[in-house]
Image 1 (cartoon, rainbow, N blue to C red):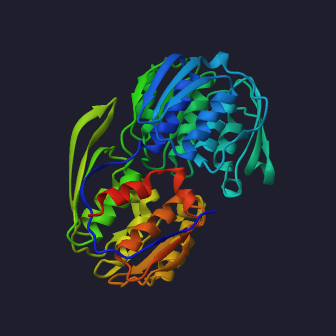
Image 2 (cartoon, rainbow, N blue to C red):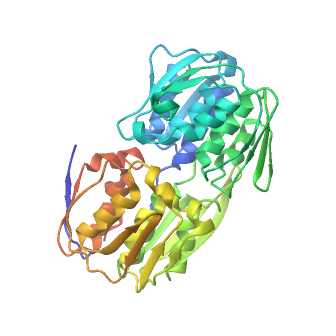
Image 3 (tube, one colour):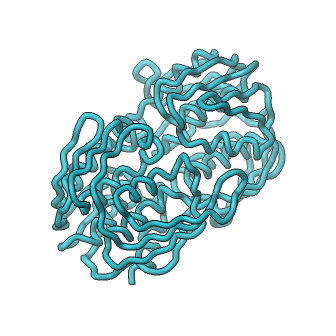
Length: 429
């Protein structure tokens, strides 16, 4: 573990920057390319630890993947060309790898086992295991198949209708991948819309998928074909700079080439509701994904109530929104965010504890938190909890703290944003 101490600064966030490739799309690009026939090229791939776990999983199954910086070449052998791994697959800290790959491994004629680190081993896997078993999957694991490690005795699955009980793009995507490998038709009925990168990206690989409102249908027995994918910038990574530029007076920052998918732009909607000075401009499409620039200026923020339909579109951004709320006028209430308890750590507890240590007036609730604005952050020593988003939240907090902020175990930020501190230093002027 490596700690870092960040000193108070009078600098502002100025100029133009780019953020690394989208984490969700990077994972999916590798999975679809690894299942495809032919050679795929992926550019602006996120080289964070989580996405590299997905790369390594397909290498273990016999897929040649060449990497040069943020460019991947994937030499797909097709679904039938995948090989049984000679050792257990290590998913590290990556919940996306674990859940999406479960849908793949359950439907391949191979025996595989998979495990994760201490954090991932506590995260619930039954949300994918139970519906996969309804398709005929044979999966066993700890705690009545709820937790990693898991063993998959792959077999031909049967299409099914799944009415989801959680709002999770990972669960949806796992079931769609299983449905693509299964016999017959699979329907996934969502509780409410979640990020739709799987539905947007599969057609780029020649896979037919039908979306009618909350019902997504996929026919089994489809073989993806190679495709070239350019990954847009990750709005979840951009979120830390959006908030930083909003709460540091005098800032004027433009973030280029960010994915502006409407199922992911909740951070922009929430910050605008708080009165943030944000402009967005879509200038191109990568496949079906809208891509554009975000300009942010320092502004006075107002409290808001965050709940309901917007929560799934910004669930990963709630830690940094909570920091913004400490600087807003009034009391911010965040509700309907129970899913935060099942992330890399219990993010409700982690956010509240961290912000309180820094001097904020914040309290936890069963499904969110209450944040009293107008806080003068004092700085101090905080722990990242091994959670990249808590670590980056602490780093942004240091920009408005009166004393240094020490982040214990800052290396976890490499999970999604290896160049975070480098980029932050470049725009502080």
